[in-house]
Image 1 (cartoon, helix red, strand yellow):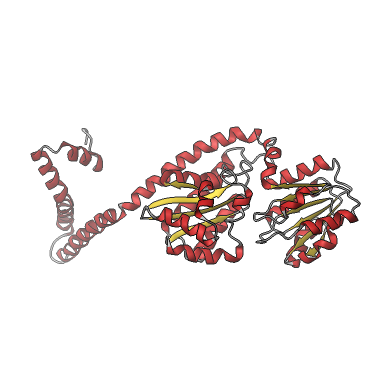
Image 2 (spheres, helix red, strand yellow):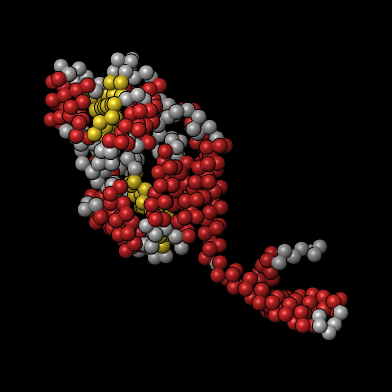
Length: 417
């Protein structure tokens, strides 16, 4: 069984490519079922920074088939996608999975949200009956590794995240946030985190817009804010000094014309906008307007870089821990290839035990227990050692020293024993 990963992330592809291969929540189940044409064991991780398909299979050609499927599903040409793709196999794939779970491959080093996203991806794949024994075991070990890294290193000691970076950048535009209004589009975990950071900086007012008004209200209530639906964004946009958006919408929901109208009402007071979503929520042309400071997730890198120094030493320690866990998983995976042999050996010996035990039970009717126990011990020993002794005798006669050396290891034989 081979483990492999195919995908793009923030290091291999720009946002313009990532948004073309992102899986929307509405199409994820369809994609999981569709991928069964290529491999029966897979899961899909799709976030603003990465789209990755983890799979397990027996055939080498499955990797190329999976790449072709990814391009076909998103209606993007293979020649356009191929330069940005990465492929990891076997040990590299296992290491990548564990590094992703630990936040070592994230735009924000050590960020914890990716672990939750990976757990959700496994759960969704499991519900779609797209996972199997190998992939599930890999993910569980990746989750355990991430937990060890969190508890045994200081990789998560300082608050560094895309949300934190977005709020830090807004403070460079508006030095004090007490008089500013923030419009947050979306109501997921990232937006909640943005709201938390803004609230900590005493933001003047928070407005939360979401497709589901009840969900928007729950987030807004955390920060004594206002909840609105997505169609109301145009009415509230002029009030927003800061706009941070992170939805799963397949197309932009904030266009250039909408922003131009808002700027006129604002008398061209500056607007700071961060589009964390992939696909993008804000039309790229908005960035060309005067008085608008538009940033995407890729633009946040420099801000994030300033907050990473304390995490780098912890990351080195975490990388060592990951390598140890990779070796442990690879050992388990190799053992799976021979588990039928191990099971057969166990069943063979259990059958011998049952046969001798049945004879011993019958003997108890006519013989004393001491004789029966002696028969049981001798017969079991003879039957269990018969085949190995025959093989070792034959090896000794034919000069097969390699088999004899392996026998010593297998049966834990030493000069003393």
